[in-house]
Image (cartoon, rainbow, N blue to C red; front, side, top):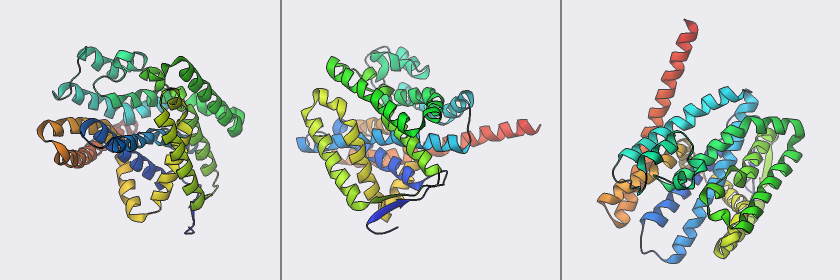
Length: 343
């Protein structure tokens, strides 16, 4: 790879760059939640800067589309098998995490606690504003992710039928119509609608398109100067729209994704940070599920920066242990399936 440009070689099933993007994204998301929810009396500009960390969710949706479509191209599957696999990889860790949030007393929910639990376990919270952010606000992300899983196979068929160009324009057009509808009606503040898959459809589908290009062994080369320009402009526009607030928030996803994504790719080229980010990327989902719970427990015993640092370190450790336990369980279940097939 040349010093002044980044090169991503196609033809692989998995990419370290994608794992790093997940690791970087989850780090900024966790820091955003830590600063904005748990650390008090900081200068207002720090809280405003921390808002940018939440943009990592856009990279998560992009990476989800990319990773899922790479797997699909490697081994095409039907809807039933796809959902079954997603249930083991996504729903199981999520359901167990929800039970932890439900039973541990530090998690306070001043409503129908049993109803909230059921809304998570049976996945209908995405339709009911009262429950969408119950037990922990960051669980909205899971609702959107599951919506994409339900639509993934139909999206694959649509892409195969009409090609990348039409697929890209169609997904962007649908998201654009949704953004305008949210801005005009003012319903973007309603979490169930603001986090609907239509809001993020274009970036999930963009991930699928990039995956197809990489699968065809196309090497993607990007100038670092170009990445820097996209990062500066994208982050600048995102910040401007964020400061303006209101309806403008409905339209900040494009500059947010491209500005944040370009920054991630620049940071990826710093080898020490690449190793850390790639490792964190492997436990990113488990870290996302459990970090708020760890912070709640930590801040119930400690205060200030000691609680922040302790909670951050503990959340990584807990995520790693949880990840290893889930992997071991999945392996055990797969071994049982193989044994049953042999018998």
